Image: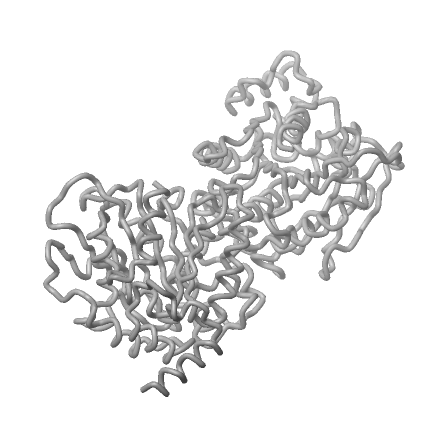
Length: 315
Length: 315
């Protein structure tokens, strides 16, 4: 065991992780080591196995869940709504858009998975209403199906927020991985908006790709964006995000794949050229591509404290 | 003759022209009547015949003209540059993008035409540098060839303005008819920008279409935008213009085709919802779709006075 630990410490050094052994981290030590063991990889199954035991089980206390509400005509135009049992003053709304490399993923990993109910529960337990959406996938539904579905979901929220106890003036759109790319596309390409002005108070982009010309695209990304490189610039979101005045929060993780870290840096720099000011940029120590979202609603609140502050300040 | 005049007055009343007989108009009376006779039509030849005698002839006094400068690899990626013979302090740059229903038109109607040299001469005579561009045409080069070429021309100006005596921080992009649509697309879709931030100090949109879903498109427009109506919303510029913070000036004419007047109203309303404020909106009395641009650099300075003020205030 001591040898294994030493090996991992060497690996951590090799990965350049300055904070892997961060003191006073809210991440349990054993989880930190397991994430280093997984390394810079997208391993949903292994990462889910680490975090599932820390998450709430159904039925969720004091939270009302409406599953599979239709927000559009397509089979996958479905969303789950999480609201408090007790109603009160109108709350902000947090819409979450899952990842899955454009060709997979879902608002819930499996019929009994805690992911991504965990993000919705955090939202409700911290004063918001949660809306968890899924959307059409490539290759059957290529560009721009994803952003069109996001636009329809935002339109649904604009129309239904008040009735759910939400405040239509405080709608935040958060996406992870491919979901962050759909969210970024929505913000950057107002032509897709179905709500005049876009209907958002802010956007939260967790580990996305914003400049399709700066990173070689994989087969799955080309299943969505197409294989014609001459279209990549116009389908990117970097320029549009820079032109937008919407409050932005961008996130990546220390153990994220290098391409996501590169894109985080690109967007961070571009956003700072905006007249409306820089984005709130958060680089999460110790975390990886999947753990950054699977850890939401655990005691490791380093990301969610930032999200809460962002939503508080962007109203 | 009295009978003809009476018939025209009845026609004017029928067209709803309240200002056709405006007192103290800088438009000569006989031209006002000829334009009413042409009516709400796009008649380039007849309108050019009216205005050509009022325009300067080559060689132009105190103005240096460089013709057919290449700004990109395509055959039609050409521009003419108009600068003062005497150089001085850096000047604003006015780029003009001609119309022609996406399938025709040119920066110069014919090899000896005064149009659109007239716009360039006005620019130089009023303290600016003029850049007159042409671009690829449909159906051979459909969407987004036009906006791509506009982006390349803006990039060329950004790189060459200083050497020409221009101020890269005061570049204004003006388009007429299909040209206004390419300019609007450029402003509304930052993904096409080749200069970070777009490189403009303002845009002047003369009789364009901004919401492709609000007006039935003709064959020529569909040669460029395609025949699939499900793409029209995302290829429109209305939402993006509303999201943009760029100073905008929009123009239409009293005798313009109803669709251009409708679109002028749509954009005027949308622009007023911007945090950065309304557009400068000018509805030109007595003028028609072609006369509004063919009259530039004559004594009828009702449009150019507004352009000069817009450029002065948007620096």
